[in-house]
Image (cartoon, rainbow, N blue to C red; front, side):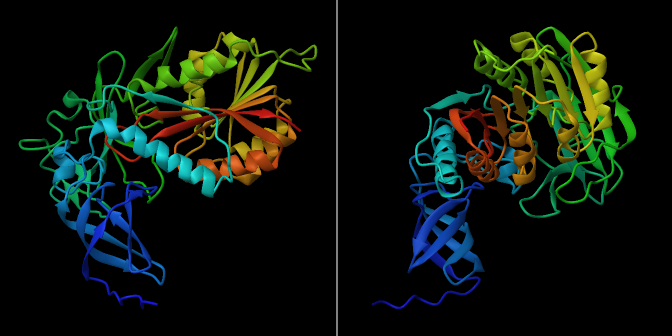
Length: 412
């Protein structure tokens, strides 16, 4: 038996990256330890500096690629090439992204979700793969220059733009000759569906949270106009909207396809009822009402988003409720169908239990993190729901992020 070689922080070792890990890292092995490789692509051989060390695993970052993977390319993002944390897949061939992301999802569903048999994966690779982001949040350094935060750091890259962003969105905001802003502030910029750019200054939000407070409008009105199908929403530029220009229509079309031909059961004289949870401005409500003829109850924490939804969808049978899902869902009429789009932290066991107790016939669950989505899948199974469809949307090209939509039916 060979003893494990003692490692220490700062040591540099050579490893072969074997497979992807959740979070954009690669996985290697070294003398009995699992090694998480920041910046590693499956197929790489790299020199790695150890930055974190535990008994059975370690983590480090690549200091040199000695043998590149066949999927490694020159950085596609100028900001990421300078250390920004925006595009952690900037050196991954775009054609390999979907395969890696589905492998990560499958692994999470098997290990965390306890899923032993998956539905056939439906893959949606949203285009374009660069210049797709129509809204962005920038940090501002002590000199008033706006830029992108470095990975796991408060430092900023202010000299180059990110390749995700629609090019004209950052004109005059980032790079040489860019305007200056209030040091320590946050800049929010967006181009809406009327082609208007809006730039506002906001206060930096606490870590893991977002702020909707606008301190100063620098360009435009601060109110974006977004259109999907026959409906138009106007709302605060700091409010949530899907990042990829094609995502709102892609998700809406998928939900429409799921609801096509659904035969609702146990419909009483009140007619069909649907819940749209974490509903934002009510993006999916028109699809639900059109396909099911249902009265939609949308639950959203942001009062501004709910007000925008009411203004845009006033002629539809949609009722907006403002507050936390876990506090409001028990007060709603029992649904036949539930659509939920929780934040990155997932819905959680309490929310899923409350939905399950209402006994919907069908649930469409949108997840933006594979680990928390897998945890939620396990909870759906625990409460008698079976996953019939599973779709993956590469809606964040150049990054390890992606969107997953699971369709669940009640079986018990």
